Image (cartoon, rainbow, N blue to C red; front, side):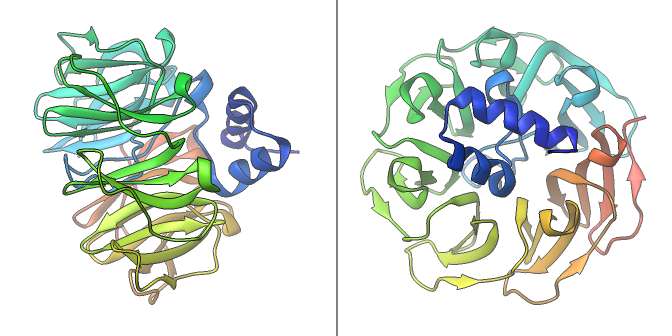
Length: 325
């Protein structure tokens, strides 16, 4: 029996997606595919367009001195709050997932409208629908939005930020997409969740690894950090130099300043850190941790031990603070 609410949400989501039993179990335990994908989606974090250091998923996004997040306590509505925990504001009345922030616009999946892609200004004005697809794994790069289309078995699509010029991008069922420079990296469901990449013009499709069950793709410099059956691995962006980094079942991976931060399923989803070379592994908190976003010397996360409330903690494990009262 799955005891914690996040995993129950995951099971509901995966059943909704119609995977076979073995895949459901693996995705549930190892991948923790977001609960709201069908009911709809919780997500992780985003750095900046073209260098999205999270796997196409964002429930916590930081821009300047604001944190934008999907508020679990209010039906996953979109909120913002200052990084010091002040000036909390509700921005919409939609269940919002796969949040991306670019300049003064927020792009998100509207769970209350069949997962369609929406945009809204960072002050909560100007809300508009951009497509009619059930859109997941949203990444914004330049003047285009890349996403997977649930109704087309998760094929990659892109569209302009004003909702025009929709294009189908590949024929692979794709997940955990992440972008760096002119490349899109993704887990290819059509080939056993192996790691692939393709250029943003649709050329150069390439398999990078024969590892199955690839998850939580992060790009930092010339290396990719990702999960394989839950364990942390890294590989160069050209597919060479593969190495295993830990033996923990690692979820919600986020890479920042030479460190990898992750929720350790092997230790009750507590927050851990490990160097990008595999050294220095350490536990940072005792909270059930998800939606990790590291920025500077702070890590922002949802605390499953406190109803998913927004917390921050220093990268050395000190200064733990509840931001969302």
